[in-house]
Length: 141
Image (cartoon, rainbow, N blue to C red; front, top):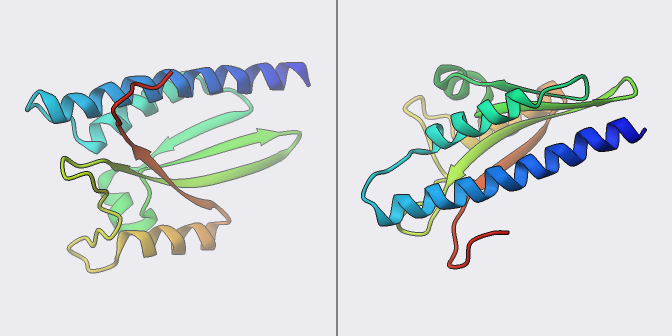
């Protein structure tokens, strides 16, 4: 069991580092005039998570086509322990310069992204989740 706890504590530390890095990048979106979009931040974070994969944790990236046509999610992640697994379909949203998130996004196909995420999650036994890329006045950690 200690090995499992060690793996997840490493994951928690990685999440803290990614949160700090993401906070700075979102702040830079507001202060530099150069914007790193949500999909760019997601790709950077997923690369880091991919490097941490083990028998207890894995992550799958969704292409923009799969996200808009099938899952409503930017990625799936899975936690596996003692033969049991928990999966989540995750949609990322970035804090805009108007201090808002585009949760009500409806793609050209007319199927609201949140509805697609919920429907896909339900039909595949996944937990639907949002990952919010934020910033506030005081840096995290």
